[in-house]
Image 1 (cartoon, rainbow, N blue to C red):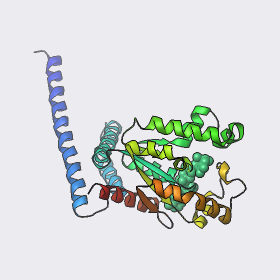
Image 2 (cartoon, protein in one colour; image 1 turned 90 degrees about the horizontal axis):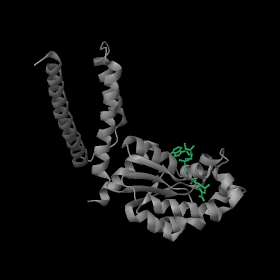
Image 3 (spheres, protein in one colour; image 1 turned 30 degrees about the horizontal axis):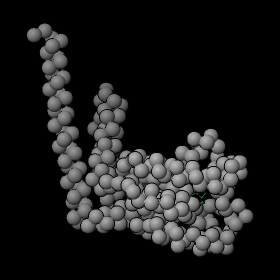
Image 4 (cartoon, rainbow, N blue to C red; image 1 turned 180 degrees about the vertical axis):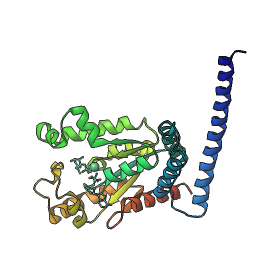
Length: 260
Ligand SMILES: Nc1ncnc2c1ncn2[C@@H]1O[C@H](COP(=O)(O)OP(=O)(O)O)[C@@H](O)[C@H]1O
Ligand SMILES: O=C(O)C1=C[C@@H](OP(=O)(O)O)[C@@H](O)[C@H](O)C1
Ligand SMILES: [Mg+2]
């Protein structure tokens, strides 16, 4: 055997070791999840990831392959999150609720924490139309926008393990809710009109709030919508005075309880 063949054999042995270590690591991930579940501990512990990263960077500080190895560990962590997500949520998580309830914010955090695909409906619609949401409303009217929402929701039902952040009006049509439920669990985020006002007052990208961007106007529209929101929801999470992490943890726990 020449040297080249020998090196290739050594490489194959290295790969085998990596596979064994990755399988062992994935099994440990599952044990950690089972432990947290058994002892009622928080599933989301963002500090832990930072700790792991610091440990690796210290360990590799003088290593000439530090950047490449850190990159591989980034990928490993992402895939560990996927293993968790697949085990916890064998369905889409569909977030609904009034403007400013935090659908986009919570979806973004959840999808990062579990390396889940995210679909931000408003963003997808704006990209496809090459127009902002206020411009779509102004140019084509609300009905046109609502039809785009319905079509997108139908399309989404082919997905799995995806976080879907709906626009605030998406749950108002009965057939939209039917689509959401085909493959997903519907989570309603709520907040008081005062809190909503504080969250939306500085933004101008919600045409439905034009002329009613005050606590009374918000309160009135919320009243009109809340029955439909509640009817659509599998889970309701109140978000006033809660951090994004607290809301996500509550959401995960409530989804897990649904499987008990
Ligand atoms: N739990 C929260 N605490 C404080 N601010 C929040 C919270 N959730 C959302 N926000 C803020 O409120 C604003 C609206 O949130 P967003 O996620 O866009 O709501 P939605 O998608 O439901 O309209 C954003 O500026 C966001 O940072
Ligand atoms: O409640 C609504 O009717 C709407 C909510 C918006 O999304 P957010 O709830 O994310 O602001 C966006 O879809 C559009 O402006 C209409
Ligand atoms: Mg949003």
